Length: 190
Image (tube, rainbow, N blue to C red; front, side, top):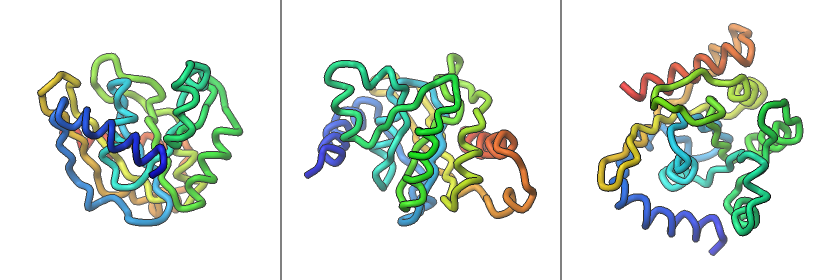
């Protein structure tokens, strides 16, 4: 058993009963091929919650500072996380993300780039649109509906893939494409 599978099982056994996690819409998640999984961001626990509820292994970008934290920095690569420099265009992280998608794997992103202080969905950064436009990956929206309070239900809703063919035909830029992805996430929160 690899570290990812072990960690997923361990984290699921703790978080699922603690937050009474309900997962909706897994039938929308492609069984194969590249998937860009885009979720809203409300808590530090969002990456592990998405990781344990997604039916396929998910690679996440994580702020590079986390890779300098003792122990955590050694674990992150084993659970498919890779560093990204925040606040600038990190070409290496962008290349790595595209490679993950082109190899037919799942890249998880929180397009807002940071946690929402209010729980309301914020404006997404252009990175999600960049990956959506530069790859042939299916773009799956995901809504995490909290709160993260012990023994209160937490919902994770996966929606149908965003119709990227239509968006690519319109020749929209990365920012506008991200706006559309964010709209799809917001609809899942209603």
